[in-house]
Image (cartoon, rainbow, N blue to C red; front, side, top):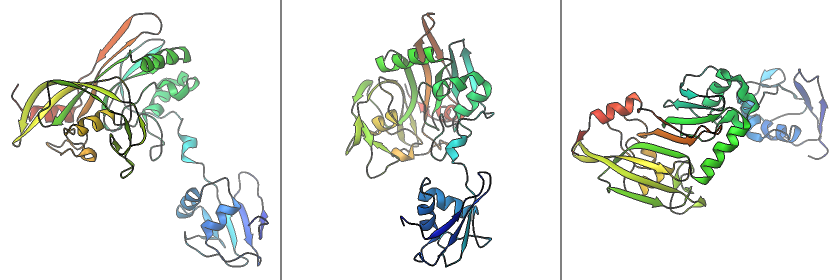
Length: 319
C-alpha cells in the first residue's frame, strides 16, 4: 500500500490518530493495516495496543484478528514503548556495602534484575540506583559496570562518574578485577580445575547458553576450587568457589553443566531442586578491584542469601 487507500486525519500529538477505511483497499486484518499506516511501530507492538484496548474501530474496542470493512473508522491511542520508561528512578530494595565519591558496591538480592530489558523494563537495580543516587543519570547505564543474572545474588561495583566507569571497565577487560562466586553443584567435583570453552547461544533453546553447537561463540574461562563435598538424598553435592576471567552470560552455569555438574536448583541446565532451592545456587561472594582514585586494591565479601544458606545447612557435609 504505497498510495494508501485510507484517508488520514492527523490529530494533535496528545490526541489519538484517526483513520478511515476507503473502498480502494482490500479487506485485511486490523493489525496488518496498522502496520502499513504506522510503520514506525512494529507489528508486535501494534498487536499489544490492540490487545490492551488502545485501538477502537467505530468507537468500540477492537479485536486482534478483526477484519476491516469500508468506512470503518480506526482510532489509535499510541502508547509509549516500555523502554521509554526504563531509565527512571524507582524505589528498589538493595544493600550498599561501601561507597566513595567514585564507586558504590552493592549486594544484589535474589530476584532483582540488574538492568532493564525485554520483559523487565522497571523495578531493576538500575532504577533503584537512579532513585538513591540521582547523579547517576549523567553516567552511562547508571554506572553499572558488570551484571548478575536475576536469580544470582551478590556483589556488584557501580561507577559514580564516567572516569571511574572507564577505569573499572578496563580492569574487567584486562581481567584484573577479582570476582569469586560460591556455588553448589551436583556430584563430586575434582579438587580444582579450569574450564576454557567458548560459550554461545544454544540454537535449540535460545534462553540457554551452551559450549556445543554454538551460535556466535565467545571465549570464556572459569577456574574452580573444591571447598567440600556433602551428601543429600543419597547423592553427592560439591561446594565450590569459581573465579571468572571472562564474564559471559550464564558462564558458570553453562561451564559446570558441561562438566556434568549442574548447579543445584538450575533446572535450565539440568539441576534439581532440593530444600526449596528453586533457583540456581550461585552467589557472587567476593569482589576485588583497584580504586580508580588511587586508593589501592579494595575488597568486599558478602554471605549468601537466606535460601542458599538453608540449603547448605541441610546438606550432610563429609569434608
